[in-house]
Image 1 (cartoon, one colour):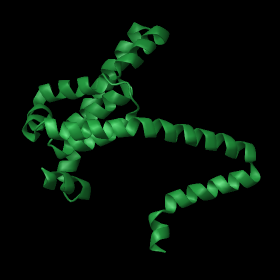
Image 2 (spheres, one colour; image 1 turned 180 degrees about the horizontal axis):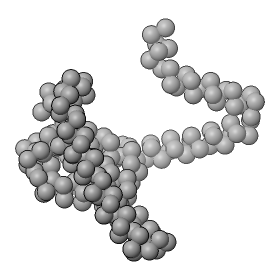
Image 3 (tube, rainbow, N blue to C red; image 1 turned 60 degrees about the horizontal axis):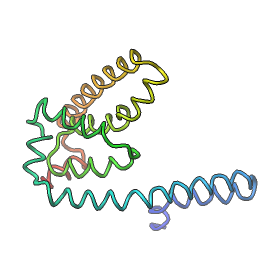
Amino acid sequence: MGLLKKFKSPVLIAFVFIGLAIWMPSTATRSSLVTLDYFKEMALIIPPVFILMGLMEIWIPKDKIQKWLGSESGMKGVVISFALGTLPTGPLYVAFPMTASLLRKGASITNMVIFLGSWAALKIPQLMVEIKFLGIVFTSLRFILTFIALVLVGTLMEFILRRKPDQEWLDNIIDER
């Protein structure tokens, strides 16, 4: 029974696929193809990301991360995390393990929220397309308001999570520092 609880999500998904295969075979085929495409994409992207993260763990000392992205980094940390988030073109799920690694090395929660939010909503290639279709005025306004919102949300999250240090994930990150 413990094994079933541990794998309840994959088992549930398998039951959904079996149900689709029985009652809606064409939908089951399409969803299987989409699942296979996502699996291929992840199988090609995730290994290089983990290699890059491993190299980052070794090559960039903890004190540098704390200096550049830590709680005391101030505006410099905001600019660096913003720049790191706007440059990549990969999918967002690549950013999560990188963020966890940076948090373990001493990056602030505020800067990591800015990094993740920039990666999700303020990537340079995305902005170029947005300018083409929506115009420079709209894109500039959205860009500025999104950046302000990211800084405010990051600051709020840091404040809330530091006030409640009983959160298990935060304790794990703090212990590893």
